Length: 555
Image (cartoon, rainbow, N blue to C red; front, side, top):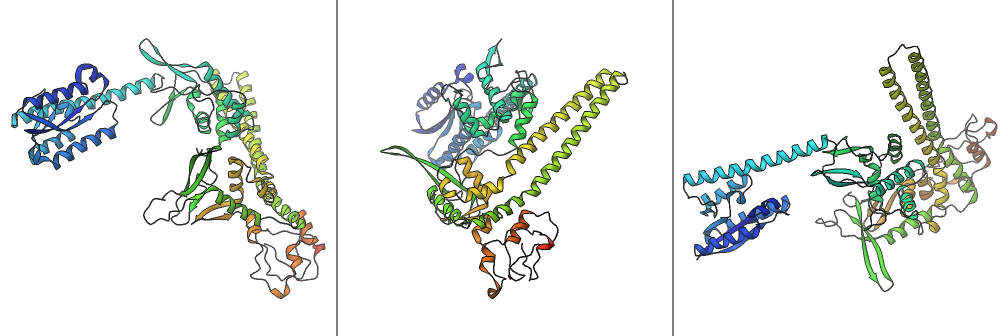
């Protein structure tokens, strides 16, 4: 009895409706095998829903099986030549099976002889199939490009719009309910001090529904909506944006304001405190990722978060998988070491922290001054342009073009001023607030939400490393002073006054309070010149405060 390997393929639903369904092909192939006194020992099929990867996988499995069992097989069965291969490269693979392994190529509906004339006929059919596939691909691409040129989406319309059939074509119309929601989202984020988390909670409090099957908005969906230029009346195609025919849902000023407030930040989908690039592996240096596991208990479902290196499964890599609670305990122990129990030392540290923000505040003031100067110049240019138009020294078209240009530039300057003001307000007291928070972290850390914890880590920690099961953070200045303490390695043990190091004297305290006074900052104690205070910037005090003793250098 003869033994065959068969392949059935359907590339589209249109071909299935035309009579080339998998069932039709399978019946024809089985009937041919029975007519020749044989059987099909292995059957491969590729449905119209198969992806390119699945299609290639099935074809490779067919080639591999035929080569491995070539001595036991009597031929390869196909319904038609174009069902065997859709490009010349695949057809060459099938011909090599015939020439090198002795497996005949058999097309049951297009029979050909196994001679030069028959092979030429099959190659001609294979060429036609390859040409049809390539031409069809080109036609589809050109059709999509024409659709974009006409201003229509090439796929499903984004949230706020919907696809409808009109005169046999798919066009885009506005979904009034969803469009109102999109406008509300942009308005809230642009003109109210809301983060994406706060925006999500605000929408939920206002009973704004995303979709009936998924009523609540997620952070990822809100982030995607705020970055989608479709709401400006544009359509995406191959990484670029083109003018569209849909109704714009957001004006340009609001859009620009939202993008400026977003600041180009990258959104992290999972709310895991130590994931999202926050921590690296001490063994290989790769990013530590988090995984969430939900377990059912008697009291209901409980959520557990574990952290591990992204190369956790690599050969030779330590299999360390740490629960979030252990990291929390280690971090709380580090924060506990930052607590300053002496009130006078806390006050001194507050003064130092406040001084650290002065440079940033001065830079913000300079930037604001420059933006205001540019704004004044633009207003003057608008006035001069208007006077020239009234005197009919410029044409109407030129006036309209230049007026629009100046107006857009002025709007951009005002938006930058708003961003500078918001940034200044957020960072003015950031260091002092972080210090105050660090003194009560043990009480606040456990109950804090994801956004608060991540913000706190960004303020206090420069980076974090997971060394085995130990969290090793690198603290930012000046918080490293609180963790590491004073560096006394260069001091003379017999010349240091403990009270001078731990409690700020009046001279230092007043100098920190009034850094604008000219002169050098000298200590009132007898500490030697090489005593160092790590993390503390150089300060100046009045010459009247200089004692006739040896000065104490402060770094």
